[in-house]
Length: 66
Image (tube, rainbow, N blue to C red; front, side, top):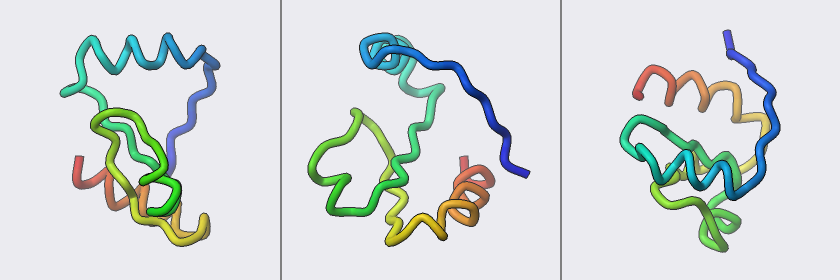
C-alpha cells in the first residue's frame, strides 16, 4: 500500500526542511535520468525511472530499502 499525504508547501520551506536534518529524510526523485541530471535537490536519490508506470514498484523497492 502506498501512503499518501497532501500538504502544499513553498519550495523555500521544503529546502529548509531538508537542510535541518538531511539524514532523516529521503527524497526519491521519480523523474528520468536526463531530468535528474538537469537539476535535483541535494541528496536526492535518482529512482532511474524510464516511465511513470514504474513508479509503484519503485516506491515499494525504496520503501523496503530505506
